[in-house]
Amino acid sequence: MPARAILDACALVLRPRSYRWCAAVLFALALAAYLLTLPAAYTGGTIGPRALRYLNAELAFFAVALALLLSLTLTLNVYALRASMRHRGAGLGAAAVLASVVPSSLCCTSLVPSLLAALGASTPQIFGLAGRIQGTVARYEALFLVAALLLLLGSLDLAARSVVGSCGSPEGGVCDVQTR
Amino acid sequence: MSKPDEPRDRAGRRGRGGRASRSRAVSYGAALVAAVLAAFAAYGFLGSRAATAEVKIGAPAPDLTFTTIDGKVHRLAEFRGRPVMLWLFATWCPSCQAGTAAVADHLAELAGLQIIQLKLYDDLGYPGPSIREFARAYVRPGQGSPAWLWGDASKALSYTYDPKGYPDIYFLIDRQGIVRAISGAPSTAIPQIVAFARGAR
Image 1 (cartoon, rainbow over the protein chains, first blue to last red):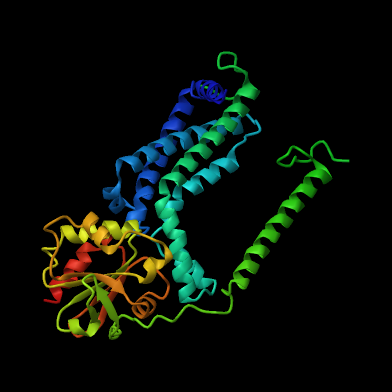
Image 2 (spheres, rainbow over the protein chains, first blue to last red):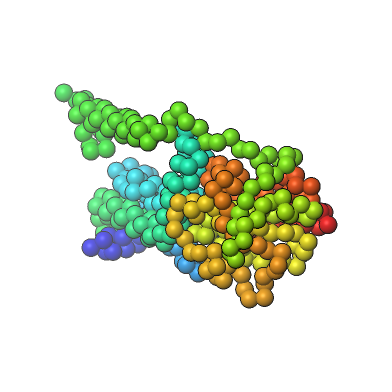
């Protein structure tokens, strides 16, 4: 069961205080980044405190959930690296981070139109294609964020299975990792 | 035969097996990039150019037409003698929604400024709500003003003022019809727009 592997891995990895601090710091940094980035679709791509006034309940939920999953995934991967384990899920994690920032970076910014213009598209071509791309991203913003959540969950599951598979149960963990 | 200390690839293989899979990945990646470029070329992107922007800061604003929601056709030159904010937007665009609400909240500070908010030609190619539905959603009752016109930009106006197809772009034009600022996302630029409105009185 994926949930069992994740819970076992978190119980093992977060037992030492150093890893709890690691997870907490990563969570705070990721949360700050998501809180400032996710509402950027409402500011034309401007990231910063000005975007915070456009943070709504839905975006706040996604910011917390994404930050939680990302910080746990990274902490498990740090643990796996220090224990010289084969760490998995990095590709999924990177894809998840990319999916989570697509709505705020693509929609209503100059990125897509400028890219099309740089590729040599004419104005009528840009008018048709840029709008379709950005309009689709704007309409299905929530789906992109749900996809990012699922990808992060998959990445966390892979990282958890690596840890549990190599170290055994939380009670009988035998990984050669310094603990305090 | 691979050596014991030779690093493994992502599938855990060493030696020629690992190198072969890396080569395959590079080949697939190169083929994908080539296919994308070929698609762009077939679609006619390469070799053509977006229209050169005719609107520049410090230059006169091109005098083109638009149609207000009551069906009247206007020319931009009709509004010489007062400062104008010409705002081109798409009705599906989140920053346009936020900008409209922000302008509505600061309308008193923008007294004297003629706001002309026009939906881009064909809503930039993606179907969104009508202008009336959009205005009803983001401008509360009592927040409107006779100095805030809504309408549709003609194709010529859209292509001339926004050749790169930005979904949210505005122009601040002074009383003499000279463009003084070009920017996007008014939701983040209300202080600058207020300063322009006050300075132009």
